[in-house]
Image (cartoon, rainbow, N blue to C red; front, side):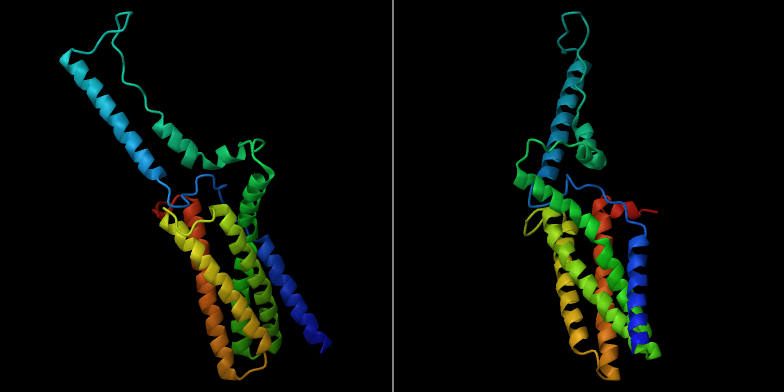
Length: 252
């Protein structure tokens, strides 16, 4: 019995270390999240249309020779739009802008809200690694008939479930407390994250309360854990896709 407990503890520690040593995905600090039913994209489109119309009007006046001259005798030039520069600051330069942002003018509550949102990208990697590894260990334990491996998988699943709950909670601070977003990927990410967290908690409870069950139930539990793992991987993909600008980052 002591040897079995030692092997279980060793497996848990090994996979926990593996989850920490894995490379952390590159995440930008989300200052322009596309969260909520806002109209920032519509505003950008209207600004671009207005600039284009103004430039076209000035070009037409220049072609007709009706453009008024400047006091120094030179012809005025079309104003350069700073819209694209603004978009670069809001989207392309998102990470640098937020890192350099000064929050000294914000209240303590506002700074706490932002800080909790930043913790989301710190927490998410651990439940991903633990739940995926729990499925691998559980599947191996079922196939090879090794209760010690299955016991280790249940412990890992409990830890992963707690991490998933924390990640889902902090995710609402990262994206704001909105019921839906103008960015469909973010909306899907919100609710799939909550589903994964709830599913992980229920599955962890079921695994601990019914560890000694029949062979057929072992396979059912492993199958459900496999579905949870797929949900975790899809959720991780959506989060990475959103932070890196949408599905275009997958272009070959």
